[in-house]
Image 1 (cartoon, rainbow, N blue to C red):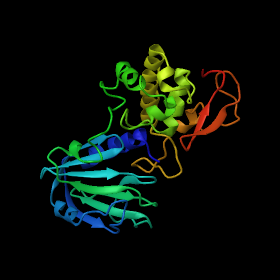
Image 2: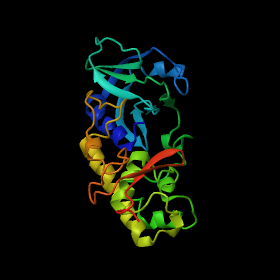
Image 3: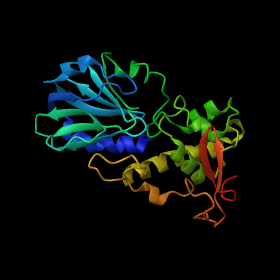
Image 4: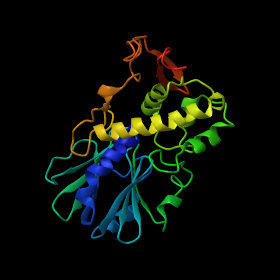
Length: 272
């Protein structure tokens, strides 16, 4: 599933191509995504995209009529800026033709993504967005915040930092990698971890996400950058997907378990 770094990479990739540009045509080949694409989205033809922002894993296109287009890549979605004459692939569901002659095309094999038109004056009050936790790369995500939410939670720390109501965008891969950098075992109860170690974890989360964004996101089977090129962060993973392989630091075999129905990886020596 595309996570925060992949979505931020996509945002940065499409931003210069769509900001300040008029949408001349909306082509919807399939409406039946996770939620149906609303019919009133066709009313956006002729309107201008003012900005492209991100909240958690949702892309938000601010439109000059005061509405917002919300795009979620789901399990397998991607956005590409292409020539409108390019042949439509089997799972290309939406095309937004732009006034400068390019097209923003949404591809989603599993159809678990979203393309919605939000009518709210403040899109962050929309149901999917209003109860989300702080962004991990912004100032509201601090050691004090993580300490306060962990104080009453006995759940495994990996599950806590993957809870979008606590902090957004720390998906399975990045949770495993951040915990490795912080030297914390994924199954440790959140309320048993000392405040100094939680502070180290906040820094590790920031670093692993920043590094991944810089490298273009983690290479997954279905994810491509907006230019069609895969990301490269997977080459630098320390624990995720490396069951039985030697730790890059101490050479101990990487362990694997299922935690909260998600594959979890750690080094039994480097993480305590």
